[in-house]
Image 1 (cartoon, helix red, strand yellow):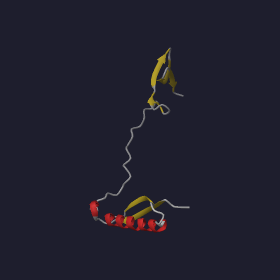
Image 2 (image 1 turned 135 degrees about the vertical axis):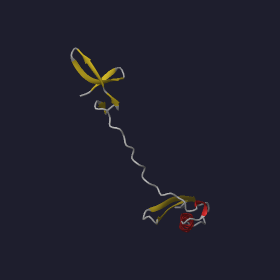
Image 3 (image 1 turned 60 degrees about the horizontal axis):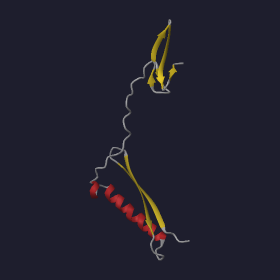
Image 4 (image 1 turned 180 degrees about the horizontal axis):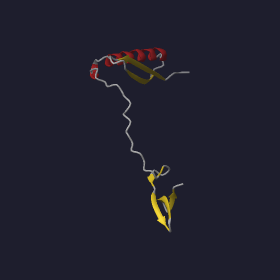
Length: 117
């Protein structure tokens, strides 16, 4: 069997001064074009070269200038409380209707109505 493609993945992590970490993970795939190319040697070479490049840029060299920002979880938006009579299924408020001394809450749904239980 002839191997025609090799793949590698490299992950590099570094602890920052504030005790947080920054991590970079890259994957690479290459094609072997000659019957004389050794896939294992090609994979080792790719891994070494990509790892060296990541460490070089990651440590503040190259075009990155060491100014990469650490990913942070976005702040959770404070959502307003839904109205007291709100249809969770259709995500719309109910409207109060009254007729003949009776009252109920519902909202229009297509050609019909959805009534609060």
